[in-house]
Amino acid sequence: MSTETMPARGFNLSKDDLGADILEIAMGPHHPSTHGVFRMDLKLDGETVVDLKPIFGYLHRNHEKLAEDIPYPGSMPFTDRLDYLCGMTNNWAYALSLEKMLEVEVPERAQYIRIICAELTRLVNHCLLIGFFINDLGALGTPLLYALREREKILDLFETLSGARMMVNYMRFGGVRCDLPDGWLEECKRIVDKFPAFLDEYETLLNENEIVITRSQNVGVLTAEEATNFSITGPMLRASGVNYDLRKVDKYGIYDRFDFKVPLGAHGDCYDRFMIRMLEMRESIKILNQAMKDLPDGDIIGKVPRVFKPAAGTEVYGRIESPKGELGFYLVADGSTNPYRFKVRPPSFINLTALRHMCIGHKVADAVIILGSIDIVLGEVDR
Amino acid sequence: MEINHEAILTQFPDLEWEEDTQSLIVPPEKAVEVVTWLKEHPEMRLDFLSCVSGVDYPAKEVKTKARNEEGKMEITVTQHPEKMEVVYHFYSMEKKIGPLVLKQRVMSRENSTVTSLTPIYRGADLMEREVFDLFGINFTDHPDLRRILMWDNFEHHPMRKDYTPPNDYDYEPTPHDDVIERAQEREKEREGQEA
Figure 1 (tube, one colour):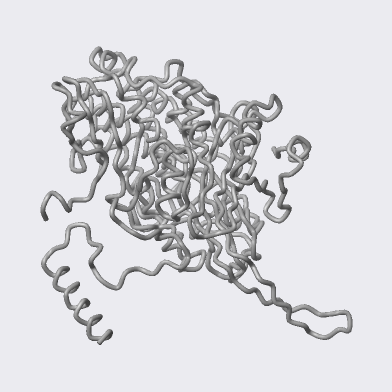
Figure 2 (tube, one colour):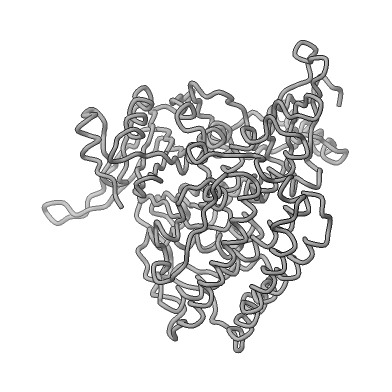
């Protein structure tokens, strides 16, 4: 293919706007720090970023169109593939939306199991994030593997529960698919009890590490007003000091019964975003301990219709606090068994809106950690 | 917590409140005015735009069966005109209330144009680009309206209801040998059909 017929992507290198010292580079889609196939077209003045354009779509498969051609329950396994690190919360967000539409009651036991799974997923996701964040800072391998070791224990739990480590497909409309296996709860308790020791170790090694502090403090600052205006959600929003956690605001499921705090940052820089995740893991452990203590006996799935046929013209928007932010599903029904419109509100895609704003003026090496601190998964960004 | 839509309708009496879907229908030319008011209203403070979605409704007939006054079954046919909607879900982070569902509706599927809210909510940037890319709805005043998920020289809008996937492989961004071969075969088939 000759250069003339190449599709124009992003901005092109043209002689007119090419200053003597401006360098245009495409970072990605195979750059290891982009966590998948994501491309940043950078304009560099020396080492300083003067402009940045994010390019998406390498993993696009039009998930939303696929869902329109299959019945409602058929999309459940596809939601695992959105944010493939957090299958449980994706399942829950979709189940919650349809339950809201059909007004299905979820039994008590299923609610508790859902919360246990969701909070374990939060641990899994935040483990990975802090590991890769330190990896992006240049501490190759070791801290990441410490985090992966803890994550793997929880993934084993998911495997015994659902048969798969990541593509769990575990939740159902009105409840969950199967009950906890024998001894699962004890194993879970053992892992959760040991988790704070890992966090202590990690915090001792890294929180006051001089390199971590100098590299990440005052880098990629996002003020509270900017964060709200950019529709940022999740830990990234709370790192900027906005107290908005859907577990507290919407109280979906039975989150109002649990006693936990919402950690908030003060500066909105990369260091705060890293610390927020560490603190959120401690809060998750609190929720897990309460949920495992109170877990009641009973049904795991409520009374659900055999075929899902919401009335024509019904619309619903259900959202939960996934580990990455607000994960929402907007469903429009037309009276048939398939959704008329199935829209995903992917948190990491929308959090990327602020990437350009945060990176401009920083060094190119800082762009790497700013991207790392957003916490993106390309399966969800590109859908 | 729900948002008091009566207050909005008092301020803007010509807006329509759709009871079925609990949403506010706003004509594109008034969207910026309404949204700015909502954002600055001291009791609402809708400062957080959560979700932007496009929905495509081609024209269609709907047949409904119902008993008439004499007790006989009667079939009524209702015509639904074609329309395009861009649905915005607003929340307030400050007041912790929401959602307010706001819809910009246009009654044509060709060259449908609505007003971009990106100048007010910068978070709308990528979401509106996605709607433009997948639905072909244009946004006036959007600072950077380009395709986002599909590649730049892709011609169609795949989320439209009348979109059919191409029956050839011409659209492959970097065609490989077997893909080119299949495309050529299809080209021959098409020529044969025309002749």
